Image (cartoon, rainbow, N blue to C red; front, side, top):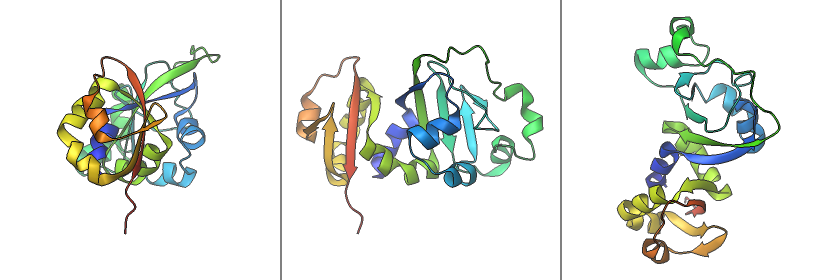
Length: 186
């Protein structure tokens, strides 16, 4: 499964209601427990800006949301949500835009790093992700052998497929729906 983590850190798309909070995306749309959100996800970036409160920060079209467990050192201390050094980064902290149109569906890119990718990745892949076809094609070219051993099944756009067929496909610029069932751990 570790070979798949690079797809999670490169980013995958989710469709949500405009104005949805980060917390609502994670808990209601993806199904992550509130305890996990509060205790395990320690660093949140929205469009490159640190977020301290996942309940008040809202998402807009094209937003890029990055999640990480605790990071080491001064950088980790500085960017940890509501951390001791949060006041020192006010110029690079996210501020919610109240003018977001709440009646539309939007696409948000979600990126998962370190332990968050490792812990949430299997369930996220089983539920399915939307990902850029060219990104996946490049991933396949470098990881096809690892993928063969790491997965029980792969579904592309709701159809079961295999690595050989995936490697033959010309992806173009299409967005694909990808569902991967990782091998069962012993």
